[in-house]
Length: 207
Image (cartoon, rainbow, N blue to C red; front, side, top):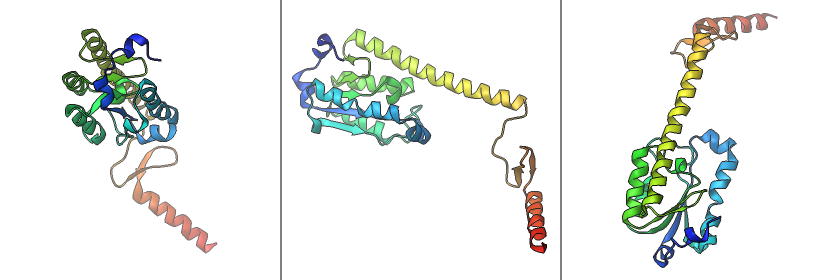
């Protein structure tokens, strides 16, 4: 819940503008399997309504579902959000957490700068922030750094897991054309597999 002190940051000018809710999951697999996170993100629109915005003032941007937040490449929804903030259409930007909006510190601080220039508020699951206020901006900056560091740690863990499997000979990667994995997980010639398969079919036909 938003405290009374935090709610005091909301002005009549903020209320005249729209509330933008940004929803994102990093991969399509997460969209399909991690539905709880997606539902929690969509549920943030009720926070905007509770703060005084009308239902028709809440704009949901979810075009970036299934896209990584490591950069803005391919994230049309995020680019639209930044553009609308820049022209003063947005009173508050909402995201479940900083990592939903951006995993890149440069992208995050660019959004913070534009929000400060247009006096746009930011809301996440923890609270309501005014980028014009030094303490709020400092906290938002730290959250952005932690989000980027978390992405680095996730990549390091995945890389470490791959190296461990490679050392034990268990790492299976996409093979060049002409090679396949056999039933035992060994690399074999696709032609040999095809020959063996055709031989089995011939045996079956003769039977």
